[in-house]
Length: 329
Image 1 (cartoon, rainbow, N blue to C red):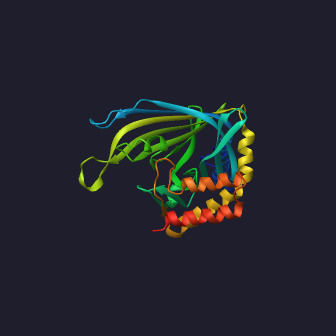
Image 2: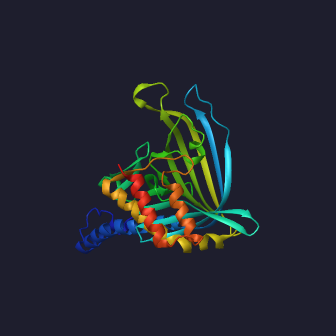
Image 3: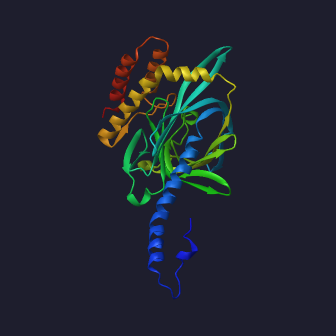
């Protein structure tokens, strides 16, 4: 947004009124720009909510070591319902619910990942390696105009956090993170590979029919046979997750699951937040099949609520006990 031409410096004239107007414009233009930017950013984030058919495409491309051979490309997919469960203006929370058709008229809902977006955050929860996450202060000069994205496991235990900015280049709007550390996803962890973490850049872009999440990942791990556990690169990976709007599946099953369990999961989120705030971070053992040491039990309590085996209050009490157990140090 540019200043009006009458505010350009005159050669000879010195009009006090025009000078005052120009001063006011100079003060107001940046504020107007800041108001417009979050509005456009928020629209892009909120566009990720809806009902989708999802395709996950993962390809190891370039080996960074002579003793490692990239695995074959892998692709999978499914259906996800993404709902806005919090929107306070500068903070938006999106919950993903995976819907799996287990047979005619039988849909299984799995609470999937969660993404929290915060505008100009004061702190960021980052992965520090080997089951450890730390809450780091974002320097004042790195906050302006930027959004953090914090991603959580299926049981609302932490996964990774990154800081980035929404921009538009080549007619495509995207959020791009800084270089972000992440623990292994289940698809890799269950294979017990030589690497044990990712260093990657995440991008999110709205598209006419949905949105995409694309990643550039360096798969990293301790150097084999080297003392001190020096972390080295093993292989480059390209990931493209495509979300295409689709209502042709059992969306009602996801809605029913969330109605029954949302209060439970709100209490579980609060318990994790408390654990993280106490120590400016948290330690939780990573488990290949379930993501974390708390995953199977916390997810199970939600299933028990849905099945009528537990009340929400009983499940919350047991869930908080599990979180206290797995975060004890």
